[in-house]
Length: 532
Image 1 (cartoon, helix red, strand yellow):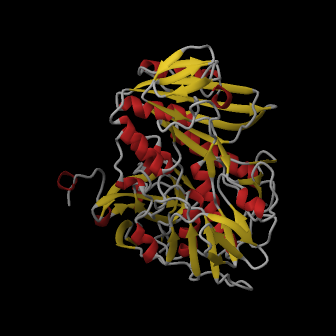
Image 2 (image 1 turned 30 degrees about the vertical axis):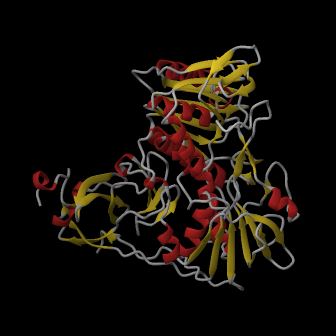
Image 3 (image 1 turned 90 degrees about the vertical axis):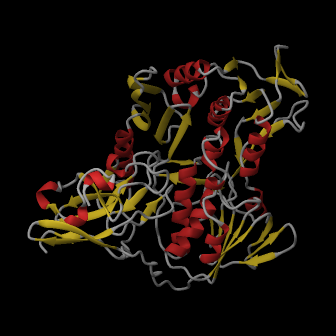
């Protein structure tokens, strides 16, 4: 098939590519079997795999090769070159992978490599039943990982939500703005859980854990026994405690139901007030402006996100939103709410048809406290994400873990971190001894502006801007340091630099302790060895 008739760019890999065209450490873009594909050489091995990330479709040719993996430039998902398997969230599905045949100096892409469920390594006692409390990022990732790793025992997700696990970051972005469909927001269909043998119980609120008899009890009295338990209850929005805070037009955004309610309200409204200039508040402002809603944002700070991202980014974000018609009210807060709008502490009135509150979240730890687990601004876990109670693990927004890079215990409310912790906790429930050492990562999208953040700088004393933030340039890196040590970076239109910093942080962290025991679980491979 020629390039002109296929609609693809680059060579047809099934027709063969000269070895000289496949450079070590570089990716060659082409196509195979009706889809965009990449070929690369790592040492004396040749690999062929799909060119689009299965998360949001990012072009992997703009990503980074690290050992025998490829990382997505947008949201840092990671795939195996050998099998196409997704190794790290936020992607859930593998990329295509094909066998490569070498013949007379030509590499040919042949048939697909069929993914195989891994075989669970032998341990002294495999859990017969695993219960996951929480249907968010960490809980869903854990359940999927358990099945992917070959666990065949009873597996239950107890979710307090009324919907299947959804793409929570998109609730304040594409879904709220109207650019993403309702159907696209669910991570998996209900049928997926049935096919995987995962018992997904919705509207199932756990109220207590009997650690002696290893049972979780629900609000309705139902009990679930477990051999291993993962707590992934996440966080809940901090509620306003002022006059009028309980009125029906006051909204919070955490669940799919919350976002649907906002979409419905926005469809028949003209004006809103957003209380809080955090990421959630700014993303909601951007999405509601896309629906032509008049938006006012109220915040205590002088600039949006200055404490986290610095004065330069804070000033830029303010000008970005003001250019799109948002009105800010900084250095103040809301004193009261009524049916017609809000009253600020200064006495100023702002008319609004509905109010959105985004003043932070707090970890949901009541269940862990009842069970007697160690708590300190979150559930205390070790480097394997196990709590103070053997057999009980915690992951996601509730977990406070020992971060090897900073040397501190940290708790991070990021979607990708939660998913990766769910993956690590799942493997450790099966007897692996896998340290959680992933570098925190998050991203924000506001209008046509995107920023990715790698690392964790809860406190910093220097924010160095390299590049430009102006609207016509927007190409920069902001480096955050504490006592001269690099703690985090934010990148704008420098995706590859963000990936390289992720690897740098990982390697800096791992040099502080020996690597975990190797595990032979690579499965099938698409690699062709050049000596063949």
